[in-house]
Amino acid sequence: MTRRTWDTNDGWECAAGWDRPLQHFFFDIQRKCRNCDGQGGFSDEPNDADQCPVCEGQGIEYLFNNLMDEEGLADAMGGMKLEQVQLALGRYLTEWPEGLVGALILDELGNIGNLEVHLGVYGEERKSGTII
Ligand SMILES: [Zn+2]
Image (cartoon, rainbow, N blue to C red; front, top):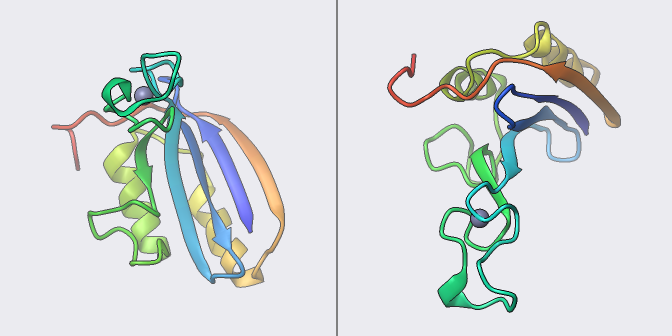
């Protein structure tokens, strides 16, 4: 698969790419959970009562993840069409790397199987209420 990654100025790590085996795009926006500082809970021993409610004990919080989408931006298997990636970009982020969408188009056209590129730092989380 191709994996094109970038960071936002407010600490989100974004990744988008073409999954060649599954023949669809993926996209996720995640960061170390700030509620529990990535620990997953608030006790030395893992237990349900002290589990972090934000990340449900995972230590990672998601702004968007194609595998967990419940907003119709991905199919049941997490597959995304390019149009859905574009919708998700606009819904969750203020800015993203110039040329990203064009690069994804070429990833699909070329059916690229193995590529990882870090693109830099762009924009930030689009706060709710400013959804376009
Ligand atoms: Zn947490």
